Image: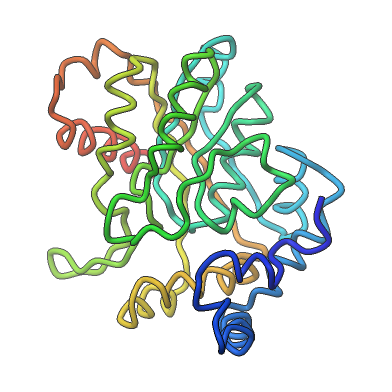
Length: 274
């Protein structure tokens, strides 16, 4: 375990601007804007634990009530590889909740996670990290992460993905606002097509604050700085995690090479669990 979840040295390693002439000043500003003390405090309270036990302790101490539905579907695949696909409702707590929910029931479960979770060494046994500095408007999945995910599945173990590769966003459609993932990205869908293992849709309820979504007008980088603010405002909230019926390889094969159509199908299956 580390003394601090995200240190000033960690920030210097993230981007060259934090190592330049005004690096320390920019770090101070970034810490203030992002409320970096929040994840550090949460980490310090639970860092004596690892894996799903750490995740459970974090969620318990935040007072987040978890309601799990249809979890018995996992029993069918306890001894073989499968993939979970989920909507990316929060950008941090959803990954923690997924690892607690699936990882406590099935051994060797790993998820592909973002920059915030990649710093959590107490969860390292359960994640594969994507490149944190990729432009969010492009494909967020690195080749290294893809290779590691494929290897993990071929070894006979389960994997979890947030196929959107970015936190859900606010959209105006048909006269109303709704919060939803962007189009699910081809990198994960190609893994699904290639590996031919069962896919279990997993819907995670909830959303971030309105100010989080509105902050995107300043750019996705600024919006993501606000993710830390979105931790404490989840205190005492209820989160419903619902598993759908597995989509078997034979059904996936019917989509052939039509990756986009497969993505639409799996995304619809996931959101139908709301």
